[in-house]
Structure formats: structure tokens, C-alpha cells
Image (cartoon, rainbow, N blue to C red):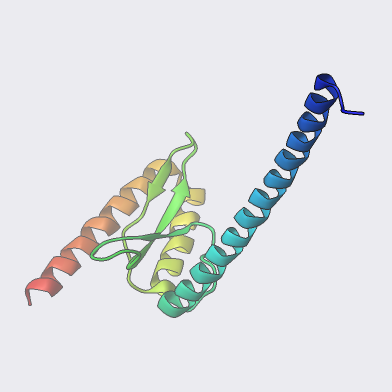
Length: 134
């Protein structure tokens, strides 16, 4: 006996629902695999370039002359915005600067932090240009 049109449609809907679930799981598995691969490559690049597998919270990669060639401190201000410090080519220098800027922000507040970040940025840019012309 042949299945009725309604039975065929119901069976087709079940297969389609099963295929969608399977597709979703496969897609999630691929995404997790890609994310894991990306994290592995990122850790390797950070180790090679900066000597650490992960950057501490508050330090971020930036591009000055080439992609990801510098680090800078980023601190959250009380209004929710971010203040970004000057670019540094040395991990230890960037980390020390981050710690100093955090301490300054805690002691004297956001305005003092922003003023100091601007001063350090001008100082860093001046040093870069002086170095580049000599």
C-alpha cells in the first residue's frame, strides 16, 4: 500500500527537521574547530612576537608601521569609554606602563589619567620621529 500524500509530507518534514539539527551541529563543530585553530595560531604569534601566549587584560595589539607591531594600554573610564595609551614596541615596557596608568587612575581619577596618556603619547611620538630622522 502506498503512503498517502499527507504521510509523505509528514515523513519529509521529519527528515528535513533531522537534517536541520544535524546541519546545525556540524556547523557548530566546524566553528569550534576554527576558533580553536585561530586561538592556537594567535598564541603562537604572540609567543613569537611578544614572548607571551596571551596578552594581559588592558594590553592590546595595534598597528603602527606594520600589522600588530605594537602594544598599548587600554583603560576603561568611569563614563564607559576607553582611554588608549601610546604604542610600545616592548612588552615589558607596555606592561609597566599599564600598571603605572592603572595606579594613577585609581589615585587621581580619569582626568589625570587622560592627561598623562596624552603626555606619554606625545613623548613616544617625538622619540619615534627623532629616531627616524637620525
